[in-house]
Amino acid sequence: MKKLIFLLIAIALFQSANAQTEDKKWGLGGGFGAYGTLENGQIGVMPELYLSRYLSPRFDIILKGDMGILRTNLNNNLDLVNPFLNLRYKLANETKNLRPYLFAGPGFLADNGGSAFNFNLGLGAKYYTKPNFALYLEAGYIRGIESTTYLGETGRENIWKVTAGGEIDFGKTKDSDLDGVSDAKDKCPDTPAGVAVDKYGCPLDSDTDGVADYIDDCPTVAGLTSLKGCPDTDGDGVADNDDKCAETSKGVKVDAKGCPVDSDADGVADYLDKCSDSPKGAKVDEKGCPVDSDGDGVADYLDQCLNTPKGSKVDTKGCPFVEITEAEAEVENLKVEPVYFDSNKSTINATEKMKIEKLVNMLKDNSNYKVKVVGFADALGSDKHNLNLSKSRVNSVVESIISSNIKKERIEQKIGLGEANPAATNETPEGRALNRRVEFDLIKLK
Image (cartoon, rainbow, N blue to C red; front, side, top):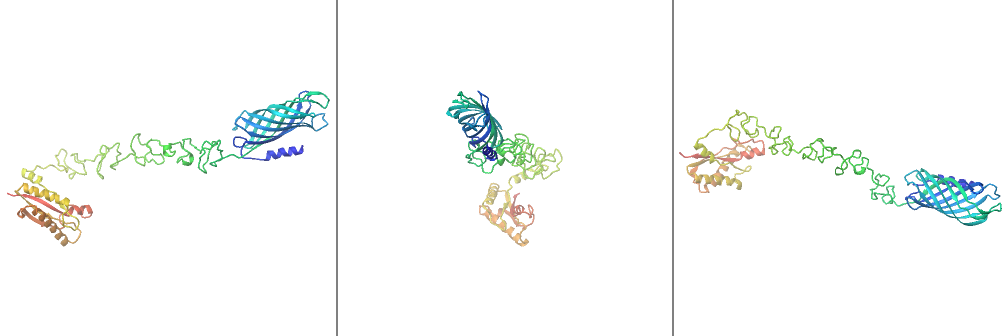
């Protein structure tokens, strides 16, 4: 008896990783209780041991051994021995701590000097105090065999029993992704190493937005899969944590920061901008259109006469329109753009030669005109050098005109003025490029 009690204590202290489930399929149990005969009511002590094997979520198979000892009025301490092969039907799933069950199965009973096959059946319940250890309580019926009792009576002694004890569960199951959930239960069998998972083996998703915490940029706030789990309150496609304009109207095109696109960078978003191609730097109104301070129809950035009186007729530069004579109009129509030169050069490139060809054609079509040629330089270099450079540029242009069958007598005057009369500032490369030039004045003969 002492050995049996010691064995049961050892079973209770022994721990394993999980309860007897699809993961841990073996169970070792033992306990003791009371038994008696249904016919004469005598009572004894019944220790038992068993080994169980998980079959399915509903069934276990159990190899059990019961002994009847210390029965009343017996001269022999051992009354019966009865091994069974039982099937246990589980009435609750393995997620519950309390798991009732039914059991039944065949056995082989040795009793009163005889032995024969018999069966048992009953009900019980297990209560898991730890993932791997359960206490159990059972009540059962053992079918007796025909035998002669110690009183000399022949018959069948059917037995009742009530036992209690403990069960530990053990075994090893495959866990391919090493997340602590067996492959049999793992609904996400390819979880990356080190990722926290739930009881189903799937990565945790704290905010239940469908994006696992380990790849969720906003793990505590439900968001969109397309934005790595972050919300987008204004629906502009930019996550709130990156959105610098979090209240953008729906449907408005935005930039990478979630702010309305401003294509011409004038400070007015495209969806409000009535003039979305305003020149860079031009002052605009609330509609994104260039400001016209004096209301003359010429925007300020083009207007060379910003204070033109209201109602005045103006030209394309925003200045009051001046009527010109027919002769002046004729000369205006015959104007030729200046020829420009590379820095410190007097040679004429192909693009600028086209301007000279235009001048030559005008002179051929208008024999009553002569031309005055004036050359300039930028401010780089000495005054003397720039003066000579401007004269060289004039000579290059004059030679090109004469080579196109225009008589040199039609060249009214040729002058090199060096860096005098700049057309633009000499402080910038763009300004200096405008100062390296040869200009033309058409003069009508009387």
